[in-house]
Length: 422
Image (spheres, rainbow, N blue to C red):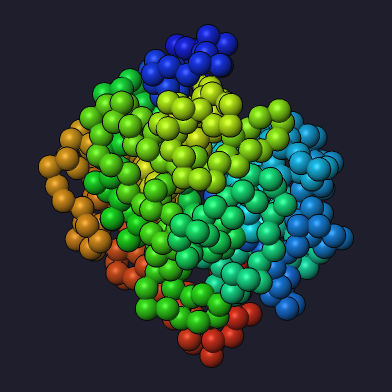
């Protein structure tokens, strides 16, 4: 997560009466001069027992808790997220670790100036988690969607926020629980200097969305069955139309605020407890009329924004790009290099504004060529996985399908192919 600007000290924001100025401050606090621009990544992966491919439970001697407890013993308990004695997240020396609703482990890097810094931190994370997994017979893997199980086989997190979300979202889309329990993705957080810069980068991300998604397709197998389409994008289009998919085009922060105001609220945090808001009340209606005697605060606004899941979104201190299927570590570094080269060079952004980017290899080649122009010589090697993909014109998920077929649809062979190792 990127650091907060001091333009609007948080203690100056109204906590009881939410104003339009305070809503805008959420975005304005992220302003940073160019020399302070960094990039952050988020990486989600899942684990199974290597012998029978069963998913990890949250509790027990051989569980997610075993891994997180060992990490806490090794590094301490900085910034913990704890509910009923269970640790759902904490900060490590090299980044932050958190748990998704189905037990996916997410690594969030510190903001970095160089891709090599991201690689060093991520490799340490992989070493720690994968070696601890080996101690209990667990192998970790990466794909856009868990390819080994039906959604009903995956355990649920006991986290209070997720209990509210699972009940609400399944009424909004048939793949809501698939999204929560089985998807894995890459996400990138980028900085912006001011409102104009933020809007320009947001609109650039919308233009590039089809091509970036196309390049990362890695979800053609589900429940040990080969599909004729990438499954993760389909899951996200049938999850909740109010808060997923492509967000609207904008010309200012006010346009994004209007979009967010008309999305229904999941819940409110009051007195250290969760208050579900299950009647379709939008944030705009909440501001106008309140809910069960509660009025809107800045904390409610920041919570609400964190429950919007479009392919491009503003989050605390950053603009987030979310359209990437989960992929191997080398693809993480390749796309981090691409994102920084494109979004941190005005000339690249201007070139993109004059082109059309779709789900095609032609668009992908033009994007990679532009990326190479703005990538320093010492980081060109990070782009090699993308160059190889363009040469063979086959997405990562189709290579996994080929391997799966060549091994007579043996799920253990697929795990060996998708497995992540330090």
